[in-house]
Length: 162
Length: 162
DNA sequence: TTGATTGCAAAGCATTTGCATGCTA
DNA sequence: TAGCATGCAAATGCTTTGCAATCAA
Image (cartoon, rainbow over all chains, first blue to last red; front, side):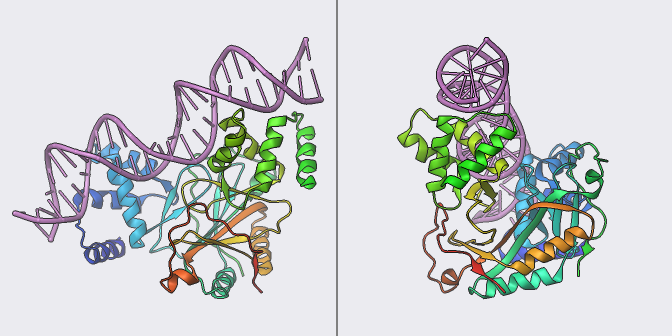
């Protein structure tokens, strides 16, 4: 949990901003959270045990985490933004089941390279990207659909595609 | 402009819904519009000349267009959903300039195949996908940044990446 | 001390919805 | 005629903001 602190502090210093105890608490909870947490859910989590920490602090903190590279925004097409840890986790993309809401993470080095080639071909300097495949997962295809998961979470490590 | 009508009518029939004159007008304006129009912008366009057509009709129509395959939702990360024609245009992905808002469309057959392979590897049945690369475009890198474009539009045909 | 950070409630925005009325098949 | 489609305004839900009070460096 120290790497994130370090990166964040460096970012704050560079942009001449200050640390704050409350934001630190938010960071702790965020790092402890499962993947794909939404701002509102993180707020509930934090606020329950620290009523003195308000909604705006959480939203502002998440924005800062993204700017500094500690977190990443993911759009799972469910109407709210979701955030995932970015430092310790290898970059990955997502498959989202439109029936049960489950997400599956995967990495494909070849796709990454092709994206860079695509960008290079028009002298575009890529900074980030977002790739989601929407469809129906194995279980749901079998008709074993479970009730829709409200907060999709995935703990396994990303599937590697070669 | 006939292909879309046909697909839509078929869809309506299959789902036992009805045609409507107003919705037809919305379709016309949508097909005539440039890529990446937002619901609100389409509403303004239509409502200006047809004050009897309301906001909800436009929103509901766009949803229908997507469900039937006539349109596709695109997330350009600017806070609103955007829609593009889907029938006549080959499938493509987007590079979005975070400085000027311009978008560049591209196709890469190899990326498509790799996505299918990724899905197949966990028996996931892909239905659609969305790939955006965010970064800085050629012009903006040169410092020739233009003022931020409010409604990003692209008319050229997608760049092919091999 | 200076300026960044916060909480609160209010504002913003895009989108959805309830309901009475109008249309289509 | 039955029941989908529509307009309006109100409701939603997530996110941002204005501002006075607090806190960090």
